[in-house]
Length: 348
Image 1 (cartoon, rainbow, N blue to C red):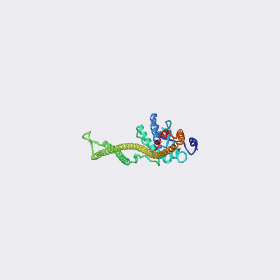
Image 2: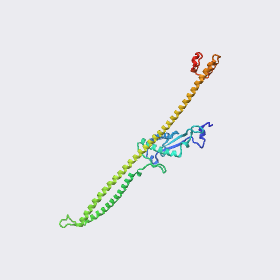
Image 3: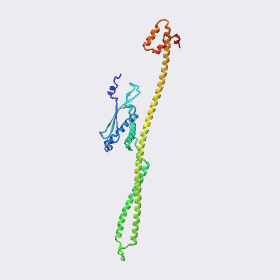
């Protein structure tokens, strides 16, 4: 016999009366850039996390939830009692950390809490933040770098970047050719007939025309590549932004689905309990009807027996009075057994 279950568990090295869970979102690098008011809004996020924890693990009864703001980042300490029910040995309800929290269940719980936490964080802060990639061996988030369209665009950017390098090279060559043309211009001879005119040989003329065409072609090619590159970079940034928003919406949808699934499971569990209780009620009603019938037969039997004694002596009165005083019979029963009534009144 256990006189004090609290003491029994407290001094039992194999059992834990309660356990602690710590929740934290973000790291020192993130929170160092945030002011006190921004940090304090995490209270609403963590309040919802407590509700989510109780929803996901109904057998964990939260006793205390305290938020710490005086350390690296705001974090929540939850202390509660894990309970297992329907125990075959000992009390039906006992503490049971190892039954409520296993290695596998904790991994699943962390994933679910992670999904629900970022969804609540974005809602409270009106942001569209996404979670960092999970550690190796865990389910990971999908990054935009894993997407086919992103990779294709990146290839196009790299390809055009290479073309841009070639254009830059041609531009350098033009600068050198420009210097050569300038030298040729400096070497032009002045016309003897008019000092304001110069004598241009066919060689120099062809050289000048070729240079001009080279400048035009290179300039057009450079402008085209530069424009395309800028367009691709902008498209890349827009795609990255849209994919981040899709990722956020996907996480929010996962959180909603998780809540719906958990609630549906709870409803299903409650429906099973209701069905079980209805079955028990039916069984109890059947049992009650059985004993009610037995009682009515007993009363009828006593009535017949006691009434047969009435003419012999006062045993009937004595027995009825004793049964009434002992509350075996109530006023209605006494009325049914009233001596002042005619015998026909007792017949059934």
